[in-house]
Structure formats: C-alpha cells, structure tokens
Amino acid sequence: MEDIQINNNVQLDALHDGFTWIHGNSTEDINLTIFLITICSEQLQHSLQSINELELTHNVYVSVIMNVSPTNKAYNEMRLRCKTDYFIQNDEDMEIYPNSLNIFYDYINQLTTNIYLHTFKLIDTCLGTGNPPIIDCLKLYNNTIMSQYSTYMNGEEPISSVDQLWHLQLSKTGYTSIDTKCIIGFHGKHRTPFDLMIRHCKIISSIMDPRIKTNSGHLCKLLRSLCIENAKILPYFHIAINHFSTFTTVDVVKLNQVLHHVNGYVSTSHLRSYNIHDRYIIPKFDNIIFDYDDFFSLFEMNNIDSEQFFCIIGILCIATDNYAYSKDKYPYDIYQYFYDILNNKKELLVLDNVDVKPDCNKTRVFVRSDITHIVYDIKHKHYFVNNKYNV
Picture 1 (spheres, rainbow, N blue to C red):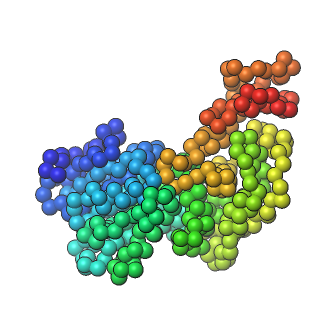
Picture 2: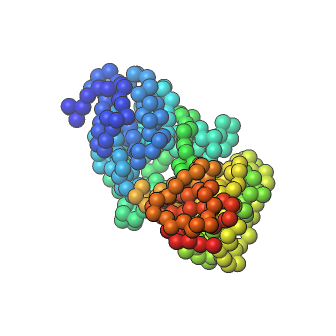
Picture 3: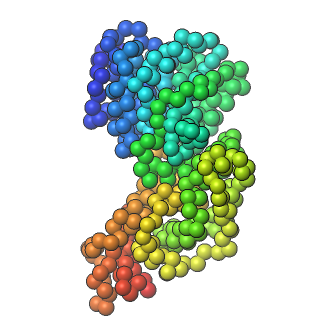
C-alpha cells in the first residue's frame, strides 16, 4: 500500500470500488482503515464530507467498497481487503464527528487480545431511542481476529442483520465485544423516503427470520413510522394494496403473516421509550378485491405523510417478495412508481402511444415506470394500465 496518496479533500466523483487514500499528514503509523461502504445513494456525499473533515490527529487509510452485493459479501470485503490491525465499518448513511479518530485510537490503545469489536452510538432522530435518540451502529473491529471469520455463514444468500450472524460465530468462540456508550456521529441524517422504506424492509425481514435474534427495539423502529397517525394506517393500506394489485399478486395469507409479526407484542414502557403513545394493531385482511375508489384516491389525496406511507409500502414489499437484503434486489421500481404519483399527480402530462378514448377528459395524470404505465382521467375516473383501457 506504499503508493497510496495523502488526500484530505477527496471529491465524490473520484470514488470507485477499491479506491483508497490516506487521511492525515503522513504515510507512517497507520493502524486503522475506515471502509466507506456505499451503493451510491444520496447520503454518500455527506458521509464522505464527514471523513474529509476528520481532524488530522492520526493517519488512517480510507477505502471504498462500492456496489458490492449482497451485503454480507460487501462486509466480508472489509476483512479480505484490510491491511491494518483495525478497521471501521462506515456505511454511507453514517457521518462521524471530526474528533472521531482520537476516540478510536484511545480505544485501540486499551484493547486486549480477546476483544473483537467496539460499538459506538450514532444519533438517529427517526430510529433512535433516548435523548438524544441513539442507535448502536458504528463498529471498530480487531482485524487480527476478524480476518479468521467469514460473513458467509449461509453462503451468499442475501440476509438482513449480517453483522449479528457474523458476530455470533465469535461470541461462541469466546471472543468479546465492548459497547462503548460513546456517541460519535449521526446515522441517516440525510436519508430519503426510499432509504427509510429500505430500512423498514430490513427490519421486517430480520423480525421474520428465525435465524436472527431481534428484540422489541427493532419493531419499535418500524412502529414509530407506522403509527405517526393511526387514522391513516388502514386507508393507506387499502390504497397501496390496490396499486400493488396492478403489477403483482398480493397473497392475503402472506400479507397476514407479515402483519402478524408487525403486530407483535411490545411492552408499553418500551413503546414509550420510542415516543409511541398510541399503537395501532392492524386487523387481518379477509380477502383482496380490487377497488376502484381506493385506487383512484391516491391521485386525489392531499397531505399524505410520506414517512408513514412508505413504511406501509415497505411492509407490502416484504409481503409480495419484492425485497431482499442486496443492492440489486431492492424495490427501486416500486418506490419510483409511488414517488411519481405523489409528486406528479397535479401536473398535466402526456403519455405517448396510448389509445385515449375520445370521451376521455383531457385533464389527466399518468405515472410511468418499469412496472406499469398508468393514465388517470381525473374527471371520469378512468385509467389506463399498460396501455389497456380500464373502467
């Protein structure tokens, strides 16, 4: 790694998989690598900025793991690529404080041979608990130990909570981890509705996976978004189900199975710790019959709470098998479909190659995505799906 250059102001367009630089003042005394793990979301620029703003008190390598999937493969690349004694898992939704290097090295200097991990807190105003709201997120690994343990406990299958299954191997072997209680930055400070939807998909997937040990806190993170306004939950579900029905099969049995987990027991005190004061238990669905009014209402509703709505979209992605914990299997098209409706419904747009009936009102909205094409006649409540007229 002798040819790696010092660069304390790396630009976003310079990043690519495997790109590595030194943040600091010299090429000497480097015991730590920060792995910037990214799928090139909008949050990456903020994470990179926080790295550029690290105080120059210690020299560290920064190395990019970009667009590697599934996630367990991306995390495994840290131990394969690391050439230093310690490494940091810095996901693209993490922004660390300028003095973080001092803190990391303070803990490194205190390490004993059987400690494989130190965890640090990050402030997350959406998913955290307490005041300030925090989550366990950023991890400092002892590479001497981690280099011996692959993330591939179940092959390359995309799984949620990769680190939990990874760490289980070490705990069984007698190694220990330390929860530092130290707040060292922010998590998801610049997340989009898509990022939050994926986070909820991950939570539900973990809760439903018997291999993964979850707790009430996992579910509370989901419930906080879901229960923002209880009166809207069922109407949002009916709307979303009817739109999902135009491009995929919504299996009521699978949906109710997912809802069973979403409705899982959480103590009142635990709910309160996440500022959830009025939880709503979602009733089972008896059957699913397409309803035009529910379908049309999405075009006409105002003041939709996007956080709650995309939480429900995440639940339906799991219920319809439209999610796996791997970058190439995220439901990008489903998100774009609903995003387009919510953001374009008041605009007059024209969709080419659609045979519009002569009596169709000229004021219409369409949503175009890789999943389906929709033209909606606001006045007459006619719509076209995949260039086919429906009434």
